[in-house]
Structures are given as structure tokens and as C-alpha cells.
Image (cartoon, rainbow, N blue to C red; front, side):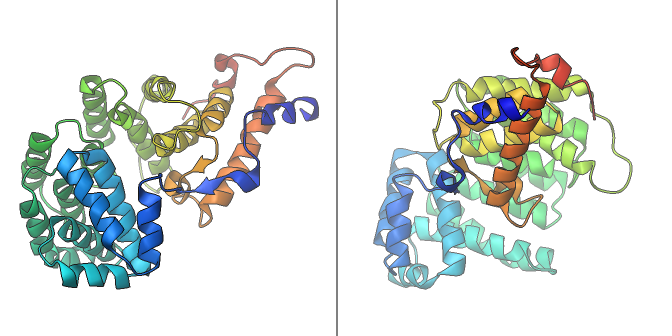
Amino acid sequence: MVRHTSGLAAGLPADDDVLLDVPDERLAPALVAAGRGEYEAAAKLLAATREAGEWENRDRYVTRLAAFARSRGEWFDDWRFAAPHDPDALLVKAELEVARGWESPARAELLREVTPLITAAAEGDPGDPVPWRVALDHARGTNASHTVFERLWAEAIRRSPHHYGCHVSALQYLSAAWYGSHRECFDFAERAAQDALPGSLVQALPVRAAFAYLTSEERPGPVAKVPRERLDEAADLAIALSREYAADDPWPAEVRNLLTYVLVRLERWSDALEQLRLTGPYASSFPWDRISDDPLGQFLELRDGVRMEVAAARPLGGRGTGRGSLTSGSH
């Protein structure tokens, strides 16, 4: 193992070069400007995504800007004062208040008070699917019925049939941890992945369903078993998706981080190491923040552990063993 471990570091950036939740080249200047108390760059960025129909980028940017406004909100307050009816500011406000409500013990009650903000955001641009992603998150937090969920889901996919964020929110609602079951979660994920556009992150939904299942095992109470084959198929589909993107590409970084977690739980060490190489320096808070208060530290620790597992499986002077010998265990 000692002989092989150092060699397996090839293709992996040094620990000090790994960063958490790095913004892309468009979002970074907006966040820097917001840090100086200036909202104009953020407003211009979100307006550009809305006008161009860049719904996936828009969703990511809204989420990150709302998170930044929670800790440093002066720039956003100025924006709201200067343009109270700006559809982009309305959307960030809705996302911000839903995120705040989620952390309260009185979550359902507080989130119900946010409903008018989500309505205003949806009316700001009737073609924008992102307010409907916020509405789906809101529905989960307010204990909304399946009937309400299905109505919101229909509105979301009418605007963007393949929107990744809306699919993720729907998958969470249908998970066993919320208002569905492992069967519903996997069925939804697999259907969506089958219908997804080439290269779409929607193809990673089954591995998200696998994550929901594997983490549900850590909670008390009976868990309906999902066949190992279904978990491996979900991972294989996400591996194929990951290979469609270049190494060190920040766009699929969260999916690659999530896939790595699932592969580790499935004890597919060589596949996990491949994903770590493709991920490069782009660690993401999710899923590591679900299992540690230090997601970056957790990522780096796991990375070392994967290298050791792969090294331990390699015979002296020989090549690594195949996937089968590394995945004999099952959950």
C-alpha cells in the first residue's frame, strides 16, 4: 500500500489548491462587488440570464447571491430600495426568505408567510422556471399535499421541461425522508434521466436517489431495501455523464462530489478515485456538509482514504483489481 499510495496522487491537486464552492467567472465579480456594497453587477448578471433564458445558470446564481445576502445584506437592501419591482431582486428575495424559514423551529408557519414573495417572483417573469423551483422547495417545507406538489411541478416543467433545479426539488419532495418513498424517488429519477437531453445534469438524478437511500440507512427505523444493482446502475449513469465533461470543469463539480460519495458507500474505490481526478480542485459543500461540519476537511480526508483503499487492493508489481473485487459488499 505504501508503494502505491504516493503514485495514486497523480492527477490530484494538492490539498492547499482545493477550494470549496468556487464561483464561476461570471458570478465571482458580482460577489466581489456585493462585498463592496454594490448591487449593480449582480443585477446585471441576473438580468442577462433571464433575457437569454439561461435557467440553469440563473438558478445557481440566485442561490449563491441569496446565500451571500444572508450574511452581508446591505448591497441587497440597496437593490431592493432602488428597484422594488425588479424581477431579479424579487427572485433573490424569495429564495432568501425560504432559506431563512427552513432553519427555524417554526419552519412551516414562517414559510407560509413567504408565499406572497414567491408569487411576486413568479409574476415578475412568467416564463422563468426558477421561481417554481423555489415554490417546490417551499411546498416541501410547508407540508404541502401531493396535489399541490403536482400542480407546482406542472407549472415548472411547462416553463422548462428539463430544468435540473426543479427536478432536484421534486426528487427531494418524493424521497422517503419527506413525502414519498425510495420506490417513488428512484422511479421519478430514472424516468427523468431517460428523457433528459444529452449531457444534462438531470441524468444524475438516479445517483441523487441513491444518495437519499444510502443516507436514510443512517436514520432509525425500518428502511425498504433498494437492490444493489439499482444503486450501481445509478452510479454507472452518473459516471457516463461525468465523462462527457472535461476534467477540472466547475459546472459538474457538485454532481462529481455527490457521485464520489455514493461510489465510496458502494466501495467502488477505483471509480471513486477517477471521479476525484476529474473533480480536480472543485470541492462542493454538498454532500459533505450532510456528514460533517467541515465539508472541505471531509472531502480531503475522504480523498486520502480512497487512495489508500485503491493502493491496498493493488498487488505488488501488478495492476489494480477490477471493480468486482472492490464492490463485493452490499448495502
